[in-house]
Image (cartoon, helix red, strand yellow):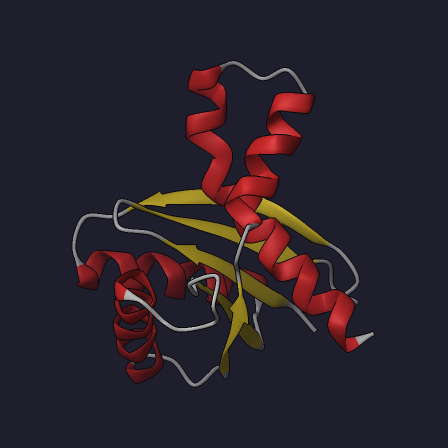
Length: 136
């Protein structure tokens, strides 16, 4: 069982994958977004490479639990992704995952430029690990 975690943003998509047993998540890449066709093709390549059977996409919610503009953009992307793949896609509340990712990187004393390059991949890891922890 491989689960793919996505942190979908306007400019990048952070990507994480679970281990084969579905216990741990690790960040694998950040996709620099170009257009919807390219973005989906990149996600599909990763799904094929890792034999993914579930996709978890972070759902950015407002602090009061409502879905805002960014959440609508994520749902729009995921709807297009679902049209192109047979793998089930679920949403995971991603509130504060980017904050947690930044905090972890600050504690690791990474430079600002390094943090900027990997923050989405780290956030995807937090999203996926939260989901994995919830099912075990």
